[in-house]
Structures are given as structure tokens and as C-alpha cells.
Length: 434
Image 1 (cartoon, rainbow, N blue to C red):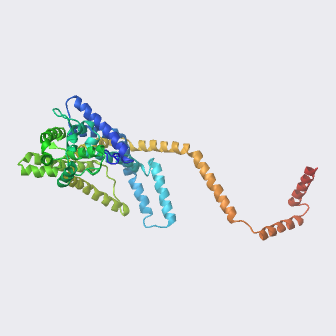
Image 2: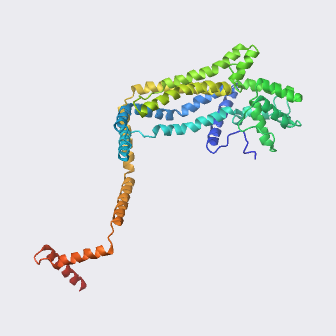
């Protein structure tokens, strides 16, 4: 049962990717701790830089595909215009063949961009899981809750679990503080490992008011709660902000406690996130628009480009600051990569790239030539069989055809070529019998 509710993601696809990324994140945190820096926020930034550096080859291929697609847009639009309004099967097949031929001309795949996105998306989703649940992947952070701190003989998790009625108290705290964890914290299970993991998830997401509520719920552990909360705050501190708290919470408490600089810092997180997303969109190569369906698609893209940064702005108020830091740092890295790629492709001869792509495609077709011939031959044989089966004569038709042939044979003139052929045939048959 404990495997089902462990804090780490155990999904069939994202689970292994998240564990690999978590292992890298844990290594970064460990190396930083060797030089006396234990900070999750800074680890997130370094981690983001490393991950996007590894994904740069995919980004490069995607941008090259975008540039080539942009170059072939006029020809692609001409094909669309040529068959605009034609819905019959022959026209649709002709349009598909001409479009495919155009992609082959430029040496790119019709699914080129999708493949790059399909590879990157699981990585990005897995990153989200890691940053949302750091203790599940960074052992040093989890140890704050599961191992005794200096001056204590037991960990805070052990002390809480040793307190009678702790399940009800923790359930009430989670409900009152609106702490959301993935998976949802469950204090009704009997597995000690599952209970420990649920406690770690909840404690890591505690705000300053949450730690105060925890001390009130467990008065005998007040000193330990203060000690652990101080350690967690130090680890989660980034430019004065607690990365486990949401910007909205920090803004609200900042104005209540007259800590206006803290509130302004929290407000800057979603604003900077919005601006960096807009910068990314501005740097991305934009395909030229055309009339008809492509124009409608271009309008949809423009609408998406406007709404996505706004979505980031709104969401950033309600997610932990740590996730906002990731959005900002990843947007800045993508922006820097895009700027350099734009400069690079300005100097690159796209015609040369097209020729190289065509040569690669030609070699690939040559390698597949034998298989293609086998398929074509099989198709022709199958077609011939179908034609023969569909053109079979009845028994009466065969008899009539045979009778007609015999009459022609009997009526053939001795001097004719048919008569001579018959004589040669009869002669050969007699000799074979002998």
C-alpha cells in the first residue's frame, strides 16, 4: 500500500522521468551543500540551466524546422489556394500529393515539429512534478523532517506520530490551511512509511502561519516546530521570499504585517513571469499569414500568444514561489537560446540546409528502395489477382471459346502460318511420345 501513496510520482511515463530529473536535482543540491550553500531556489535555477542545455539539440532542430517551414510558406499557400473549395476525393488526393512533394523538396518531415514537442513535453511535465514536491526527490530536504536536527533525539515526523490523536489534528490542519499535496495527504492509513511521507509533504508546504498553527496543535513540540521551521525557511529562502508560499499569500500577509518590500517582491514574481513569456513569443519566428483556413489559424495563434502569458500571470499568484522561479528562469533561458538561434539562422544559408536535407531524404529512400519495390510488386500481384478473379469466365463461355478455336484450326489454309504452326506442334508431340 505504501507504494501507491509515496510522495514521488510513480506514473508509468512521468514517474521514471521525474525520478531521473529528481536525481539530478538532488546531485546539484548536494554539490552546493559541499560549499556551504543549501538553497532550493538557487538549485532550481541551476537545474533549469542544465536541463535546457541538454534539450538544446531538440530546440535547435525545432527552430530549423520552423525556419524552413517559414521559407516554404508561399509555395504551401499557393497549393492551398489552388485547391480552395474543392472537396472531391480526386482534388483532395492531388492536394495531399503536391503538399507531400513540397515537403520532400525542402527535405523536411510533415511531422517534424510535433516529434520535437512530443519528446520535450514529458520532460517539462516531469520537471513540474519535481518542483512541486521537492522533498520526494531531494534527500537532504526530506532529512530535515525525518532525521533529528542538532540538539534533538528524534525527528519532527517521529515526534508528531508519537503524539496521541495526531491523525485528527493533522487532518484538521490540512483542511483549515488548505494545503494541497500530490497525492492527497491521508492520515487514516496504517502503513508507517505512507504516514511519514504524508507528513513530510504537508510540513514542506507549511506557510509561516501554518507553522504557528502546528505549534498550537502540538504544544509539547513547540520548540522543535520553531527549530524545524527556521531550517526550512533558510533552505527555501530566495531573495527574502519563501519558495513554498504563494505570491498571493506573501502579498496579503505583507500588507497585514506592513512588510511592504516583501509584498512588492512577491508581486514581481508573476509580473516578471508574464513579461518573460511575452519576450519568448516576440523572439519566436512567426509564419506569414494567408487567406482562408491559414488566416483563421494565424488568428488562433495570435489569440493563444496573448492568452498564454496572461495565464502564466494569473496562475503564478496561486502556485508556490518556487514554481514561479522555475517559469521565470526557464523563460529567460529559452529567450537567450532563441535570440542566439535567430542570430545564427540569419547567417545560415537555408538553401544549403535544404540541399543537405534532400540528400539525406534521398539516401533514406534508397535504403528503403528494396522494401518499397517489394511492396509495389505485392500490390501489383494483388491487383492482378483481383482483376483475374473478377474476370473469370463461366463454363459455357469457356466451351464456346474452345469450340471457336477448334473451328479456326480446321478452317486454316495449309499454306497459312497457323497451319504450319499446327504441323510443327503435331510433329513435336509424336517425337516426344517416341
